[in-house]
Amino acid sequence: MKNVLVTGGAGFIGSNFVQMMLERYSDLNLVVYDKLTYAGNPDNLLPVAKNPHYSFVEGDICDAAKVDEVMRRHNIDTIVNFAAETHVDRSLMEPGGFIQTDVYGTFVLLEAAKKYQIERYHQISTDEVYGQVLEGRSVETDCLHTRSPYSAAKAGGDLMCLAYYTSFNLPVTITRGSNNIGPYQYPEKVVPVFVTNAIDDKPLPLYGDGRQMRDYQFVLDHCDGIDVVLRKGKIGEVYNLGTGSENTNIELAHLILKLLNKPESLIQPITDRPGHDRRYALDCGKVKSLGWQSQHNFEQAVEATVKWYVDNEGWWRKIKDGRHYQEYYQRQYAGREVNK
Image 1 (cartoon, helix red, strand yellow):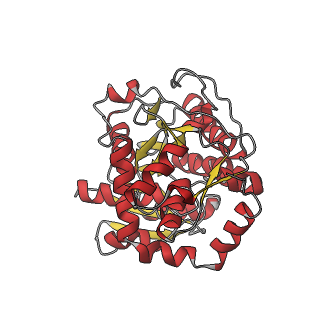
Image 2: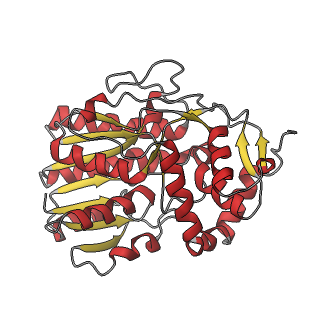
């Protein structure tokens, strides 16, 4: 790997990955390719803006001509695809955009990877493609059982990657990560919503009974796992990435309020999300065999995340004060309150 195209690199996980890789390796050139939708934020990349090994191109992964131009101009030998529509709630409102980006966009990138015979194509996926797991843990060979337009679109992208490996011998790897938390996460996801609302003494909108179970992993642990798979993973294989431990959303809310010294009365139950998966759980033994290990447990990951949002109010305040965010928040949560 010398010239890496990081699609969606201005988003949450992608920007953390870019910063980590540029700090870790002095011989890599990283080209961030991002459409800069509502969740793609140039501010996320300010820490690397002056790094001579970093460059930025604004573009859509569905634009085949633009992707081809970037591949050729930068002599790309590796693609790491973070670009995706990612929020389940938004997929319930507008599923079409998820199919376009997460499936068709992946196809465009795979075609470019095939044309230029690159060394590695790595797809960032999600544990949600397995569907809810009420008992046991998902392993990489499990059947996919998607239950939202988001997870269905991500599964479609995964299957396209594996098809290109089988049909064209394309050097593909896939990682399926659990719920990421940490710096630069757009405040529509549960942790930044809870943290920033609590800071402002506003209600924390908690779906249903709050007993849904998730594996919350710190984003830099996830990025480290991606790097391990890029360098040590077997071509054509899928690797789960998570802590291997789950907590309920109500436990998450209680911990955030405790860390911020806020009252538990801020928790506001709301009507549940349609088709809300009850539990995700990953078996991560396969990636651990490559030498990877999560460095943060649940409490450490939440504490580090809360601290970042407290210390970087200017970053999230600008987003939450904007018209786009306020319209989304009103459309998503208004009138859904349930008596405590």
